[in-house]
Image 1 (cartoon, helix red, strand yellow):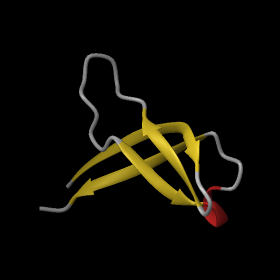
Image 2 (image 1 turned 180 degrees about the vertical axis):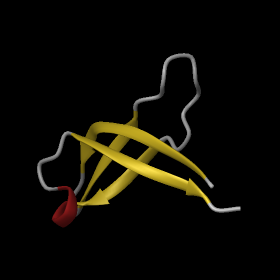
Image 3 (image 1 turned 90 degrees about the horizontal axis):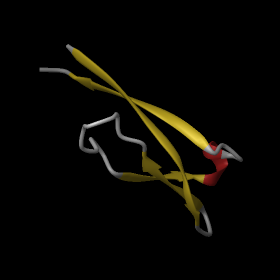
Length: 56
């Protein structure tokens, strides 16, 4: 199994969610791009980290 941690920073706030843009590693293309996280979970976080596991 392969694991990858992807970092994101605040981009834009909507009515019920916050959009975060990926901060790619130097010289690498984005793995995910932008993601939306619901406000009830994200709170006031300006930076988040997502862990991706490749199962097979």
